[in-house]
Image (cartoon, rainbow, N blue to C red; front, side, top):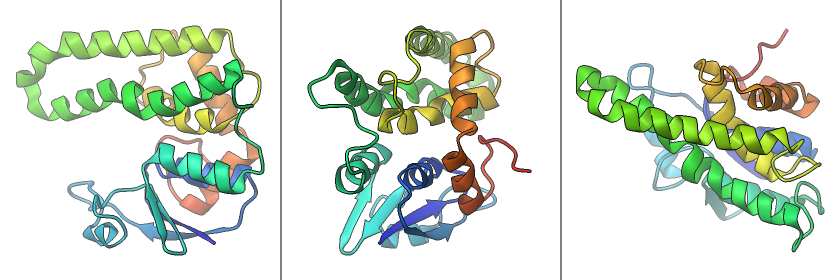
Length: 211
C-alpha cells in the first residue's frame, strides 16, 4: 500500500491525481503548513531528511521528489499506462518534460516568489526574471499548440508533472495571451481523476472549485 505524505496546498496534489488516474489504492497522511511561515511542519523530517512534500512510502521504501515519485508509481504500478513506448519520439518528450517541469519551468516562478519579499531591493532582478518567465511560457505555448498533451496524443506522467507550473501561473494571472496553456490546465482540471484527488487531498489554491 502506498502512503502519500501530503502537505496541504502543495505540489503533492499531483501525486494523488496520478494515483487516482491509475485507480490505485493508497492512503494519505495529512500534514499542515505553519500558518505564519507557510513552511512544512518538522514532522515531515521524520519521513525524509529534507522534510518536504511530496514524499511517499511503500513498506520500507521512501521516495521523495515529484519526478522520481511519478516514475516509480508508473513503473511499478502503471501496468504500461501513462508512459509512451520506450524509443519513440513521445517517450523522449515524456522524459524531457518530466525533468523540465521542476528543473526549469518552476525556477523563474520561484525566483519571483522569493524576491517579492525584498521589495525595492528586487528591482535589479526583475527584468531577468520576467524575461525568463516569458521564455518558458512562450516555449510551453508553442509546444502545446502542436500537441494535445506534453508527450504526444495521450496523457502521461509528463502531464502530471507539468500541470503545477501552469496552474500556478494561471492562478497568479501570468498566462494572459497563452491560450494553449490555459486550455491544457482547464482540460486537466476537468478530468474525473483530478477532481477525485481534490476531494481526497483537501483545499488546493491552484485547482478548480469543487461544487
